Amino acid sequence: MIRITAINAAVLGAVALCGIATAWTDDASLRGRIVAIGIPGIAAISPVGTFLPGGPIHDKPALAAYTQPGQVLDPARILVSSMSNFGEPVALAGQLPGSFLSIDPRGAATLAIPPLFAANGGQASALGGLVQIFSAQNVAFLNSIHNPTAATAGFTGVANPLGLSINNAFGRLWPANAPNGLEGMGSSTILDPTGEPLAGAPNASLGGVYAGALTPRLPAQVIPGALYTAAVGTAFLGRSPDGSTKAVFAVVCADGSIVQENTLKGLDGLAPSGTVSPFLGERWQDGDDDNRGALPRAGVLVNYSPSRILYVSEPFRNSIAVIHLTDDGVVFHVAGVSHIYSEALNKPVDLTPVAMETGNINWASNTTLEVQADFYVANRGDNTIVHMRQDGSVVARRSVRLSDGRPLGNLRLNGIASSPDGTKLWVTLTGHVPGAGNLTGAVMEVPAF
Image (tube, rainbow, N blue to C red; front, side, top):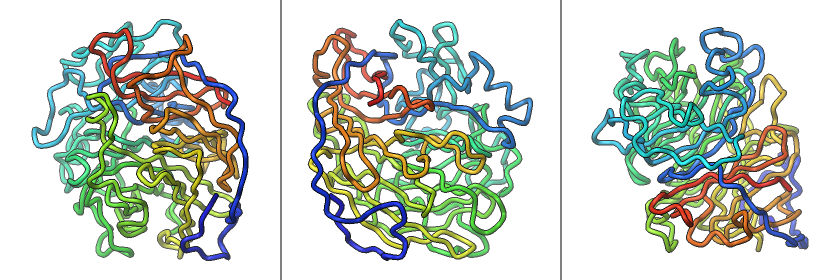
């Protein structure tokens, strides 16, 4: 059911906020094919998808080259985050390592990622190019490369990444990072296909990296806020309401606050700490040592019409926050907050659309729902996936199993992504993979339902 905690009835829009007692089908398991193994601290996952005409990655030949077959942003590939640098020397000794891998998931054979394949740095590749580094905590990806005067010039585009939202409509790729653990300052970045923070940034004071309180809107914020704690999830909010046409992203922080980031104007607050159930002090209590090393994270989605609604998973509350947004012609504001509670939710760690917005030149993104579309929830607690409507009612729930029908054992769901055509799902799994020795972390493909 959905419980109303604080809401303006005028902005309910697409969501019917009322008590719901809905039975769901729970008839079968999903047997998955392991796509890749050997990805320590695996977390976020997303299809690359198609970058639309009118956007820089489609229209600029130097950037579009990275989207060609076999390249790092080939539309058929997936991007997967890891706590490992895969051998790349870290640029910042005081921050955690981490990377995004670009993986071709189409082959029948399981890809075993070589643990040190990227020792030479940069966008290294392995296994005949089927695995590539997109970005990492390495000097090849410093903000200073294109933005030497930025307040965050010394930051990299990726450091212990926990989330990813891609502006396939008219922009670039935006990771959410926890470079200093959950309690330390977070960072959120804008990356070119090179994996480097944004070249030609419209705001020289931030370039392509927002971090802590270093990159506020200047000369003054409209709403106070900062990335005081880790960025645990992110989603594309569309174009700025100020008429600038610049992209704005929402970033969820470990203290339960949410900020909004304007490519041109910088960072403003959106919602205060505690709006989302906080992650600080929380840890996974799973049986596998690798699972205990994985940091908690949130799934974030946006429904944009008839009203703008932000959905954020709350794994330690077994709920999903429903955050209604309005704007004043300058920035976005929270109009009300409610929560989805359901017996089908068990440590909901991530969300992905059942039907993803892929064709709208203002909205296409892996974190954007087609108007009023359903979404999937990945439950870490019991390794199930829930197909849920936006009103909180459950269509179906499925347990995830290995291809031979065995349960996942100590593996735990930690991320989920749907394919742009809606036919398949990819999930990330932390823990030791059965029969793979000491290798930890895996990507699995399962059918959509």
